[in-house]
Each structure stands twice: as structure tokens, then as C-alpha cells.
Length: 87
Image 1: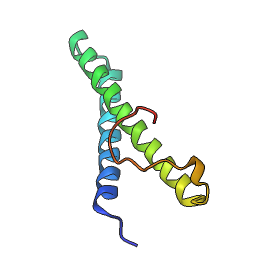
Image 2: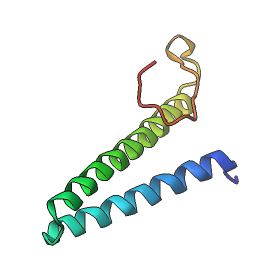
Image 3: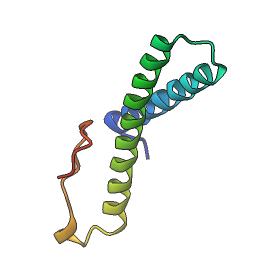
Image 4: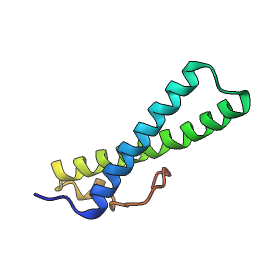
């Protein structure tokens, strides 16, 4: 079954964020960045980590809903946003 555009986009965004995060880690581990560049890289890495974590949480929620749709009392609306805030 083909994936919808938002699902594909979210997966692609997760993979892109993860790739960029891995590249940042490699550059920082080489130890050749200035302090300012290291701080900017760390800040960017934290943002990428949060994006990845949010995407994983959304995927986990979706899998939960698919595996047990009968638990309506614990069901929450699926939000395709980037927010990490709990409901």
C-alpha cells in the first residue's frame, strides 16, 4: 500500500535530520571546529535530535493506534505537527 504524502514527507524529514546529525557529530569529533562553530553545531544538533525524537514519538503513537484501535479512552488525535509538547 503506498504511503500518503505527509507520511512520506515525515519519514524523509526524519532521515534527513538523522543524516545531518550524524555528519555534525563526525565534524565535532574531529576536533577541528572553533569554539563558536562547535557551539553552533551543538545547538543545531540539539534541534535535529528534538525533530527526530518528535518523529519517533509520532510513529510510536501511530503504531499504538493501529495495533489497538479499540482503546478509545486512551486514544488521542494524531497531530502531524512538529510540537514535542504532551497533550
